[in-house]
Length: 358
Image (cartoon, rainbow, N blue to C red; front, side, top):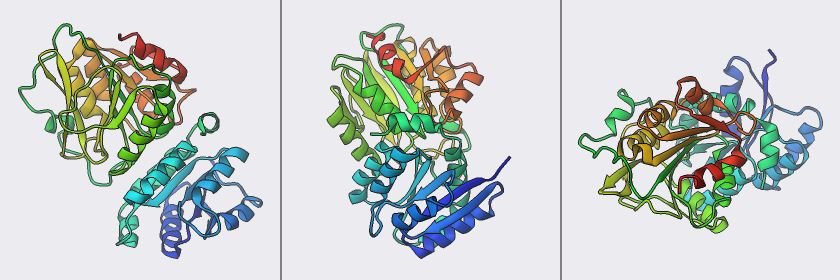
């Protein structure tokens, strides 16, 4: 099996040195170039095209988004955005994701070298997952960061508080729970923009770093007929509204009588993520049961597989995005393997399935 060929494009010499060194030291990865800006990258691409590009956003001579769009227009290639996390940069990075980037690795302004060294395993895992991305899907969809600490010992049990009311046999309102990761920004856009204003209430976990989710939700809100916003503690889950878990916080469904609302809470990482799809799915299984639809979509890893099985066991309908339409089929594959998936559907059919919940 040939090595994954990677190009690093970043104007910081420190980032180029550290990232290239980390990747080159990983088995099965070969760094074919590390260049300071997109124009130099374009020249190197004439000599050799990589399997994955690790790309900064703010660079001289040509910004990363312009370069990304050019790449996706000429020869769709998995791109990992490695960008400084700032409020100002969140909107820019959302544009990069909409343009076809498959993942984000965040980097701080201070302690950069130490951060990159300590998060080397996650960076390598992200590049490996990107190399497996469905580039045909990237081309068609062109317009999580996993957390870096250790996973929680007791998984979602440490988040779900005891005494939560069990699901009612039937409620007037229905809940749709969507979980996704790598490639999910594009997938969510396709699903949510296809929904009319009259649709079931939706709760979403998209693996994404802190501060990015607000910009992502605002962008979707401008594109969709339904209301899309970053979830806040005690927000009601109502028809025509989608609530996206904030980066760095868990989202849980709660019930008061026949009405649903969300809790946004701190807590340990679950499956190396915060927010975690498993945490959300398990709370939906407990509080909504057969009144819910669970949807697991494109993403690497297995977050959500256990929770979706709990939803199905509790009487909820469950679906997974099919392999052909996924950017990365990891999360749906694992959910199918564990028996949590009732039906597998192409991405284009998910919105219609959601409307069947009305």
